[in-house]
Image (cartoon, rainbow, N blue to C red; front, side, top):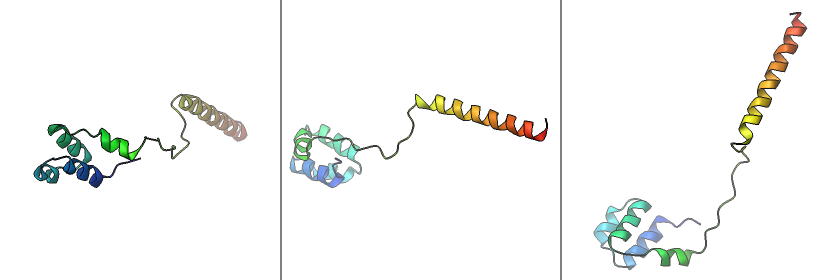
Amino acid sequence: MKIPFQEIKRFIGECGAPKEDLFAASTKFALVAVAEKHGIRLEPLLDAVGTYEPSKPLTTAATKEDAPAKVDAKAAQTVKTAKAREAAAGG
């Protein structure tokens, strides 16, 4: 689960970070830096959100191990097709 920027900002503000630092932080990374600067632990926020469950992959892309075999098979098919065309053309 992703934690929204505003939720992180609110939590850090409630833990005592100065408003100036919070307003200057424009990314989640900057908010983490503000928390570190002021000794604010983010674990309670993470515990409140719950455990991380990775999302399912969006595609069924081939793995790196599969790639060479698929390329070799495609190359072999291309050579086969070229030879068949040559034979059909009388060459």
